Image 1 (tube, helix red, strand yellow):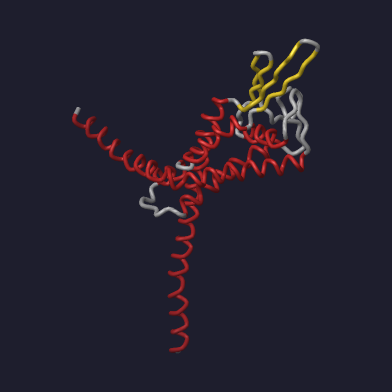
Image 2 (cartoon, rainbow, N blue to C red):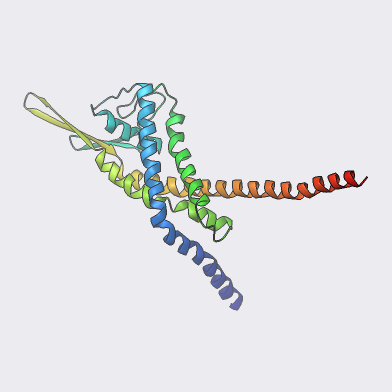
Length: 237
């Protein structure tokens, strides 16, 4: 019983530094999350310009279609509401045959890779700019996850910003069609899941890269004296 209690207390002490680090770094990491979101949106817009945009079911401004595509790249479904009926679908599809899908010539994987790459870069930068209080794997990953402080709020706000409605009248019948990213996916997948996973991976990549650089420098330092010693022996002879 005492051993079990001791093990639990040890686990809590190990978890506390990670939680403290996460809370402490949230504010300073938030701008990286906002930047990753904004750059991802702009790159998505650029891809759509090269790709050509064609949608079915509802007309919307280009900047809103870009938002739907950006959320779709995170696997967030587009919610369409017509006459009280809700329909959900992924806007990114190779087939582009459904009403909520976007027909593309740019491969879907390109759109899907953009937010992953940007979040990993952000996690990488957060780690490289940190004071690296503890080089452990757990705290390194924790540094990367703090990007959620910026990505989650702007992701939720963007969901409502990209909402769009069209009203059509036929005789005496008026139909309103609305479209916006799904709320649950915007929060859990885009806002939380992506930054936690890929921000952590980016930070771990930064740690791995830094260790490789330190190892290379150490090897160079060890090799340098050998060169000097060889030269001095030559002069003596």
